Image (cartoon, rainbow, N blue to C red; front, top):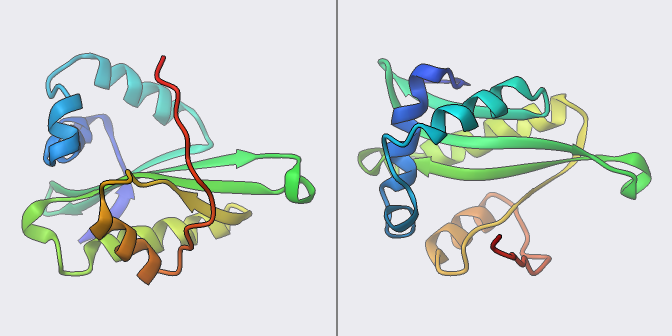
Length: 146
């Protein structure tokens, strides 16, 4: 198993992971060409890292890491982990933990002083998972659909 930066060839596998749960099934559209444009934008931004867990050429896990420089915390860079997904047959074997720990290590190497994430309020299993990894529910996230 290798955790690495995603390539354009991984997009379909990543989208399949995003669509493979009740929330994603309602909002993702595998095969839509907009995913390729989104990947190109992510891949061209040095503060974005779309990663995959690759097992023999198959995408079995993914996450996106975003680095955000800011003025608060004395000019600190924060890292945000998003869209963590593990293929169903790989869940429960520690891959999700490996992905998140990999992202935390990369964030630290890139100078981030804080790693943050959001998870849908309905994902209670994910809440327990992140808390087990040391994340603390410290804020209330809000969204405004556009």
